[in-house]
Image (tube, rainbow, N blue to C red; front, side, top):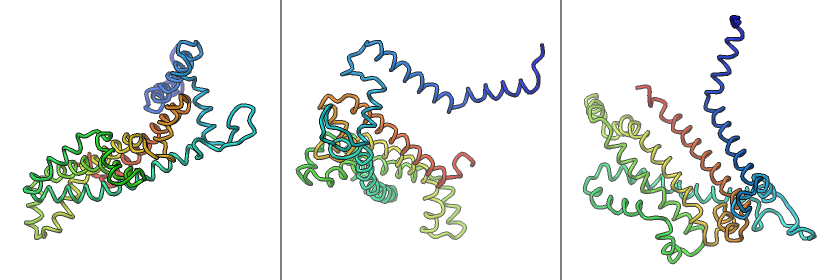
Length: 283
């Protein structure tokens, strides 16, 4: 029996939906959660090492609500470490925002400066690469000696995590600008400033935005190290302290929140990149 045209269209739409990124992403999430639940329900792993999804969800809810400090106790506490989890997350985002703002300003300006001054590039670029190669825990102790255990040290650490990448991306973007475009602008009577504004900067902007995206990722992965000392409130510090207290459900909840926030930040950077460089891929 031949399939009706309406039935064929329905099947085509179903196949199209099942091959979409949204469906495949959702299906993979459901599969992982089902596997996680099956492993914990079967008791294959000690709950201390891998709590169930329900326990992690309970820890997340508890960290965002007021609850009894222990079973049978009349003492009520709110959140974890005297703050709700969303407050921990907002504080970490604030630190990252300040550190990244300085890294973007200094990194982009410094990158353009080094790109236009070869002698300065030869002097400073090795040190920038040296900082980029260092792990954050390698110099956090020195920053504590210099700036104490307050937010200044954390902001400096996040700045140093993002700054080198942004500088290098800016230099690479300027170096990749076609000289023919710049010379054409000069031939049409443009000054150096006009050539920079209308040719060099737009042409190097995709590389700069890519560097900012990488810098955001490096800064976010450094948040736990930045908040190891006096990091409360802070989502990285909460993840660390809950781990030292063997509160595995809360630790995993913090890890999930950190991961989801990182994905949202990355998506935001990608969206901004598309908005400020709409010509990319259309040339």
